[in-house]
Length: 612
Image 1 (tube, rainbow, N blue to C red):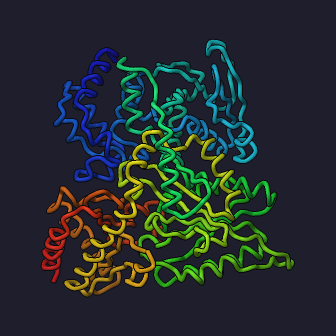
Image 2: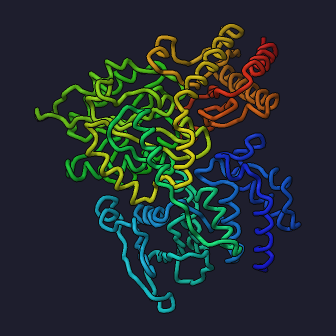
Image 3: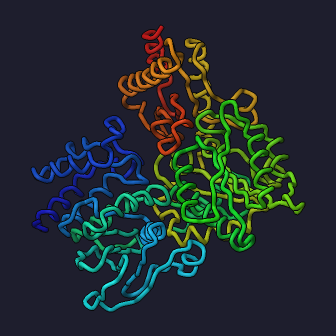
């Protein structure tokens, strides 16, 4: 490959960059094809390269890259493609990360499961967050670590060889004895090159870690990496501690807590830090005991998948299902599960969403408090270990669960929220968590693992949160008003539909989500016929909405956006990794404060007329 041709093409791309490539968490939802999301963008980008086409209009028409900025986005794909071209390898073999340490952890995780040896070679210094003792003692990873002067004198090794280099330029790499080259750039992230056919099976495993435990290099940082590659700039990030102060103060105010909040690069980055921090705490305080993560089987697929991926790495960690939706009562389910865990003298950690997703249900909070506070006994009569309640309150981040005197103030509780929703209005993926005073000691280990994984929010993410967090509560109120009005409208014109949404009484208590689920009426002679009819009707409704109102209605899992209306089917999006029997084939609708509600009513009425 002619490197000059690549450099010149990228230079021209940077001159004509679509703004959405930098500013949207999901690009071109109007032409999103989920089955092709990992390949379609680069296939068409390659065609543009072959014809030297860098026109803005052509770039802007490229389809969605991956399915979400966390896994990948246009600029991460372009960066990986460019590095691959310069190294004469397939773009699949290049994976960018916002984190400098997670790429190493991804390889170590795979090798732990494969019982394979690993050696880590490095020049200069390792990433400063690379905590060798914690990786070996808490994660259970085994590896050799060696500082070298060059790769010229490598000896053969029975296992995987990782070479980590820290530098201020994006460089080419080639050495047949190295399996993974990791270029680490402290200010912007890292780039992994997977060497050789023998390591091809690592590609999907490393991508899965990026999808579930961290994020891709962010758009702004990918842009800087590309500018460095073509010689337009050097690596450097302007730090603004004022933004961080604004964000932390806003989170304290929003949640009503006095403890230190933590802000990570995504909601799942935060969740991973929480889970690993709690495993670390259990190892220190309850050595040898079984650890049970209690998780709703139909909750968000990322939560479900991550929990099970973590458990797969530990002999003493198990996942326990927590039925919460439909005919199941969350409080009763928690009581049943905790009684069983108490008898086993195990360590209980409960992950739950309030309101639940996608059924938007809120349990009896007084009963929940009583159940979590209840003192239980082991089979030997000893006092059982009290639970830690991990609350995903992304739907209603404005509710004060943890503040002194509130429902969960007397139980060890950690609350977290996805920042790609209300906190940033869809502008970035960063997420945050807080602990009540009873959980303050737990937060120390959680922070330690967030730092080890280099999963803290980037400076640009902090800038976005500082801009949008102060207006979050008002946006929640305004979006709820639109949602309530739309729900009331649907109930009037399609009374046979089942709508899952909070009651007026719950709304008065502060539960004002802007998401509801819609179970459309169906027909047919058999249960299979009825289910098939309803599923087809879901798609008909969503396709009508996004076709008739393309500037506002999008096919997306998100909500809390600054404008527009979002539609999805949980079973095929957020519950992608959930067991089939626990999936919800219903429509989930999310409204914002800024949208043409009357137009949406009219299109929905048109839909009803076609099925009546």
